[in-house]
Length: 180
View (tube, rainbow, N blue to C red):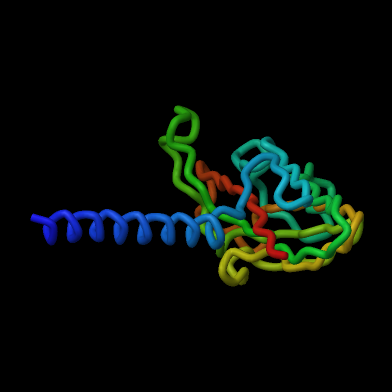
């Protein structure tokens, strides 16, 4: 009987160890991305919760110069600590399924879209959305007490004029992953 109790207690201890290790692993590797606003280790991230849909209201093929006049999606990353942080800005496609306006429409392909990413008033990247690798728009080190203001414009590429883009939309989410 004593062996059975010892085996039972050892099983519970093993289960608790595996569970605690799994939770620590999750918190360390997967709990760094943000959605609207957060404060991660003294890095404040504020994301716009509007202007992240491109639909028929702003859906015409544009060249890069004309695209600068579009209303951008804006977000800010501020480091309030005394140490530097590295972060990744991620762009993820998303479908709007709970809105009757969008539920009957198809999502635009990334190959039909271009983007301009502006950092602190200067355009740092322009290109095809399809060329973004691993959804990473930008990777940067933010110094202590520094603020980075971003603007993102996503628009139909001028080359899509003859393709099927009517009655479609593109919805995206920007996320920021930080690491010390």
